[in-house]
Amino acid sequence: MRRMLEKSLGGLAVALAIVTGASAAEAPEPLSRDWPQQGVFGTFDRHAVQRGFQVFSEVCAGCHGVKYLAFRNLEALGYDEAEIAAIAAQYTVMDGPDEYGDMFERPAVASDRKPVPFANERQARAANGGALPPDLSLITKARAGGEDYLYSLLVGYEEPPAGVEVPPGMNYNAYFPGHQIAMAQPLYEDMVEYQDGTVPTVSQMAADVTQFLAWVAEPKMEERKQMGIKVMLFLLILAIIFYAYKRRIWADVH
Image (cartoon, rainbow, N blue to C red):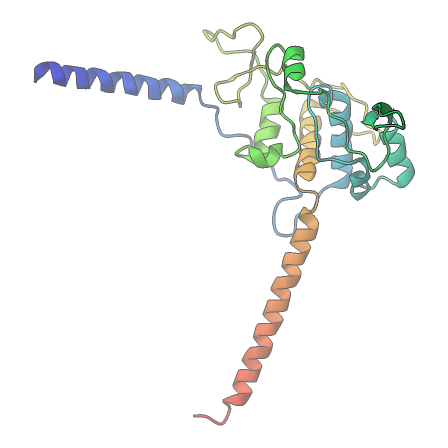
């Protein structure tokens, strides 16, 4: 009986140690920001999303894809037909087969989707030391915390605390679960040149690319909210009409 009790206590101690260690490794709550697209009446900041598209194209697109984004979708951000054609022409896509049955590359057009950086998972891992860069099409929906988590991750790179050893090929991030992430710090001060004159601080670029990826994840969000408001107004008016009609029918009943 004594041995069983000792084993039980020992197992409990080990379990507590594991839980304590796991809790210590957990990332803190992400930084909270007021995003313009949040809330019932929230809309995307078109200027911020355009800047975010620039950051994604110049910084992130070398490793990450947004496989659901077609170039023509950029019209919703304020780009005109000529600008979209110029953006698409910077890329090539695989097409075919031709008259001889062969596949061929051609310049992308507005109807094409933005090419992903790697042909397959093995190629992606081989180019990134075994790590797999995720597709970012739905990243703000796939991670708890959404925009706040992604923003915090991008600004959360720092030197590890004293006594914390980071293995080769890993980087310390204050907001990543476990604090060790394979992705190196992607953003540095003044690494892009915004056309509208906005100062490209790390915080600014992180906020802009986060808003761009939030739009990629839900490009019809504004239309959905507008439809929801119209439906609520319709139901409110209908309820008032029904109430008035009910009062008229039962007016003589006491």
